[in-house]
Amino acid sequence: MKDGVDYLDPRVRDALHDATEARDVAYAPYSKFTMGAAVVTDRNAVVRGTIVENVSLGLAMCAERVALFATVANAAGRPEVLALSSRMTGGRLTWPCGACLQVAMELGGPDMVVAVTDGTRVAQNRLSDLAPFLPHK
Ligand SMILES: [Zn+2]
Image (tube, rainbow, N blue to C red; front, top):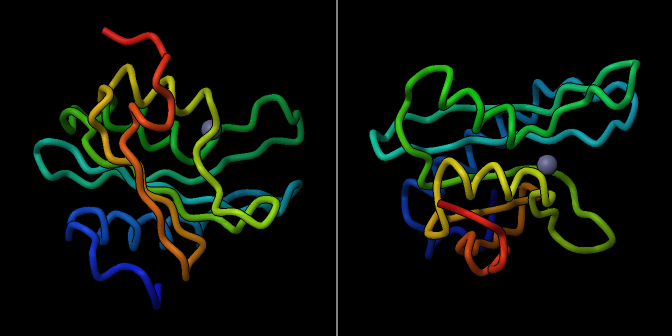
């Protein structure tokens, strides 16, 4: 990442770096849409995820949910930051899909910071700003 990261909280900046490294090991032989994610928890654990596709296309799983589910599997704590690295979609930075936002809401809550990058540009939002009407605890 070259630009636009100076203002970021160090945890968010580091998570974007981890997400970008996770993107490098993405398993996306069908779409070629590589994505990597990293979650930072309230214990400062960093848990990575990457997109995992399958020849049975409906079995693919987004990088963000791989990382979010792994925080539970590893008892890593409550997610506070979700970072995503992928290429742009339609000329805009790619944000998590609705399913991933719902899982993030369940595990992290509305104050979670969601940050995205394409490797150069960066943007971030609170989960509650991205999805203000999702059901949550
Ligand atoms: Zn998703």
